[in-house]
View (cartoon, helix red, strand yellow):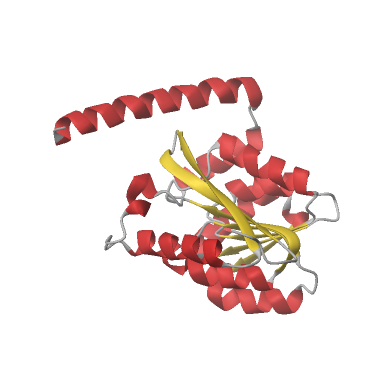
Length: 238
């Protein structure tokens, strides 16, 4: 297959993925002013368009509700779009701690969360996550019910180590952007993001107290996927 033919085929697939997302979202996810305004504010502030899609945000929200989560940790806030989805799933006494390395992004997120009326459920911390996670551990004695990892991919293995310290049997650990448009299968990749994801997945697969599955996704954000791991109280037979 020529490169031009591959590009044309990929473009055609992406168009179909977009259209299917739009169709499903129109049926299942009502329009939402606060979420739409958050995306507009992110774009106006020049933030990168790394937000989860509406159906991915709803997926996270449903996972929290199924889990009965009241304590959530998000590593990678960006403009707070995914934070809004998850904070809405929490009970009134619930709390989501969200970590953002960039002060500009955190300021936009705080504005979006305030506009959405959710800041009373949010502990937004600014600074590199590997420097703020020790404080989170000190400040929150109870383990988190769910941890969503969606930050710099080379640090994913370190984030996993922290996630295991901050969870309990039954907690969920979710990692985003693990397929990298299929590049994850290339052991010799020179992309540190790909290598970070590969090591992250290997550590999950080899950990005796994690049971996990990875799901490929296609849609408005292209070809990617999630890994969902559950912490167990006994070694998993693999």
